[in-house]
Structures are given as structure tokens and as C-alpha cells.
Length: 188
Ligand SMILES: CC(C)(COP(=O)(O)OP(=O)(O)OC[C@H]1O[C@@H](n2cnc3c(N)ncnc32)[C@H](O)[C@@H]1OP(=O)(O)O)[C@@H](O)C(=O)NCCC(=O)NCCS
Image (tube, rainbow, N blue to C red; front, top):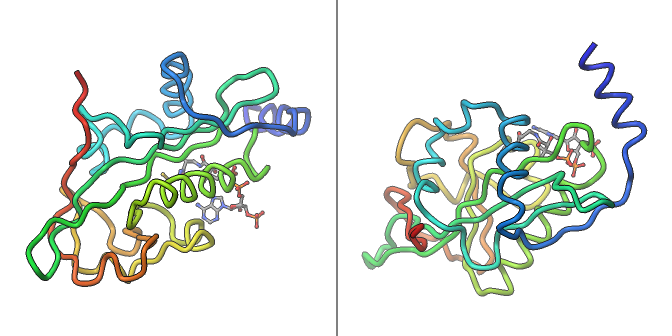
């Protein structure tokens, strides 16, 4: 029954949306959306260890809103060090996630719009690379592949085939090896 209702709601859902910077007023709606879409298990993910107690990278917390301004999608990016370079210096990068779209609005291009806006904003802010853990079948369309992360590890269990990266600057992750660690601003 729930699935039927979701389908009916999706059919009648408004088709226009906007991508916007997240504001403090969006936090509760974003957390509720993530609980609905991903369930409470989301808090046990290795990526969550990197996000916990940190603020997202500047300008890189985005929401999708419906015509009434309600949050129907979210993506955030986080400052990390993606191991160290061959010269032994930390490799600054971003970790993307979670990305989620309200199930009544799936398949309308909102996930894609959030991804493209986030990538373009990250590039404009001169970041060198974006990493994430997710389905390659979805993220490859945005240029994310597993080859650039082969010498990197997450701080906890992860599936290597789902550990993906996109270079915003050519060769940024060349030789990067080691563990991903959080490097973003801490929550007060
Ligand atoms: C994944 C997700 C963000 C996509 O949002 P969306 O707004 O429906 O995405 P878009 O409309 O831009 O793209 C839809 C396309 O992606 C495809 N797609 C969605 N999830 C996919 C997946 N896991 N693997 C492969 N393809 C996927 C759909 O089949 C559709 O394909 P089509 O364009 O050929 O019809 C959304 O389904 C979601 O929130 N899922 C649950 C949370 C999640 O898995 N997040 C990602 C991990 S952090």
C-alpha cells in the first residue's frame, strides 16, 4: 500500500525544483529526509565518522526545494585529507555525501542537478578532487571512478568498488595513498 501511495504522490508531485544553499532553517528537514530515505543505519557508515563533529566545506551544503520551498533533496561535501602524496604532504580533497532525494521526487533529475551543482561549485572554489562511497552505476555518469582511490582507505569498513573519486584538477590524486581523515572546521 505504501508503495502504491508513493507512486500516486510522485505522479502528482510538482515538477519544478530549485537548487539552493542550505540554511540553518533547513537542518531539521534535511535530517528528517535522510532518516526517511536512508534509515537510522546511515549513522553507522564509515563516512559518518569523517563528518561527525565537523561543518561541511564552505559553500558546499546544498538543498533541492520544491515550489513551496520544502527540502526535497540534499548533498553536502566535507574537507578531508586523502592520504599523503609521494612527497609526504597531505592531499586536500572533499568527501561527498550523503546525497539523497525524497522518494516521491525520484527520477526527476534532482539528484543529478544536486551533483552537477556541487561539482561545479567545488571546482569554482579551487578544490582538487571529490571522493565518495556509493553505487558506481549511478556516480560514473558524473565522472566518478574507483581507479583514483586504489591506494586510499576509509577509516572503517568500506567496499573498494564503491570508493570513487573525481579529479577536478588533472593528476590531483596521483600517488595519493593512506587513510582518509577529516580536516574541516569543527562544530562549536
Ligand atoms: C540515488 C538518488 C540520489 C538519485 O536521485 P534522483 O533524483 O532520482 O536521480 P536522477 O533523477 O538525477 O537520476 C535518476 C537516474 O539514476 C538512476 N539511479 C538511481 N539510483 C541508482 C543507483 N543506485 N544505481 C544506478 N542508477 C541509479 C535511475 O535509475 C535513473 O536512471 P535513468 O535516468 O536512466 O532513468 C536517490 O535515488 C536517493 O536518494 N537514493 C537513496 C539514497 C542513496 O542511495 N544515496 C546515494 C548514496 S550516498
